[in-house]
Length: 196
Image 1 (cartoon, rainbow, N blue to C red):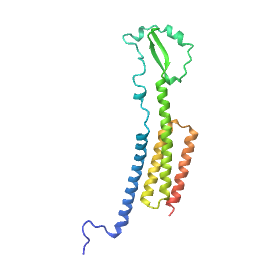
Image 2 (cartoon, rainbow, N blue to C red):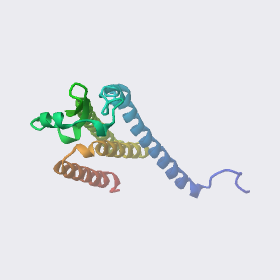
Image 3 (cartoon, rainbow, N blue to C red):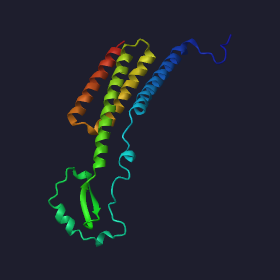
Image 4 (cartoon, rainbow, N blue to C red):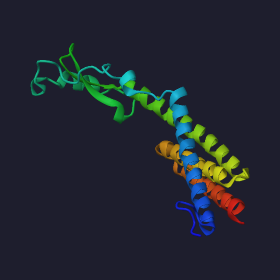
């Protein structure tokens, strides 16, 4: 008697079961990452430059004047002794209609936006480290292989995205420590989970 069409041979059942476990674990991991970051976005609004700064900066060039025809000597004399309370990347030239020349001023709105963005990235970093760490821990102790592997995968990706998002704000020592801790945790998880 020949097997029914579409039935799986007994020898192929372990392969099919492994594939199903892999797909389920992968799906759990991806959905976990999306859940964490959409949750962050839903309940913790990211700073938006258009809401904070758009339209607040004065015109850099006066309307109806040609920049070459402006006498800059008055403003240069005033600005020579001016100490601006901002870093060079936040300085901008603005036309002063009273003096009829360009003065340098601080772009306070951009400074505030950059500080708010850095704080947001740091907070997302902390949230993702905590959420990813919990997922890794639960994935290690969970007895169901597909679910545990999925949570571990999702935890690793969540931590990775959080670290990458905040990477530019971190110093070299902190980066080194984070990489060392993540490496040690992955080796420990691999030893504990995969030693059998």
